[in-house]
Image (cartoon, rainbow, N blue to C red; front, side):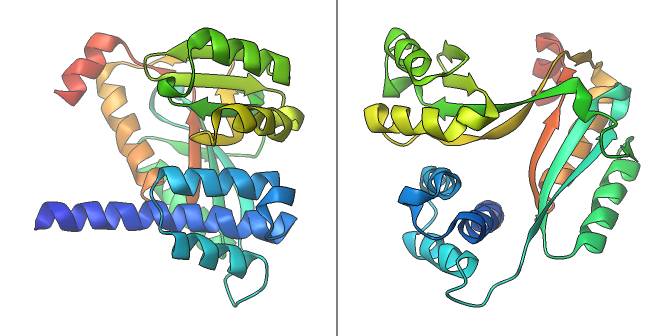
Length: 239
């Protein structure tokens, strides 16, 4: 019973974050997915997470102004975690002061510290990222289709296909691939680190506590970090 309750709570948190993205996407570009690439990507992500259709439609209506709903703004926080790991925290919030305080507390309680905007983002590249399951296409078929669509790079593995492109090309590339392979698991802008920082076992435990605290915050949509942990260390931490 406890396990089911924990799973339900986790699912509700995921749906809450997806709902915010749906609302903001609909507010910015309108409630018609065919004319709003960001909304189309948000709907695809919600479907992958098995978010109920009614929830999706309700969030879109709120964002498009068809029903009352909170107004969210997008904010980016930057900081450093244990071992000098650089972090970018992207949020959607209806209360800037509350969120800033909560994010700052998560950093300070878990071996990190907040920094000014721009303090770490120069260590990352802003790119468009599209993800497909490995079953969507063969490695060669995905590579050729993605490059023909304007992608800059394709990485395929047993876990799936990861397509990278310029931010301005994200929705055009995603549109071409969707026509050929169906909806992707995700299509969004991400921060990709230019280089990584090696983190030892002790620092890794504290870093994971920080990442968990940030992810547990309802306002936090995504966290990007530039850490690298040795495989044997990861095995000990997850044993």
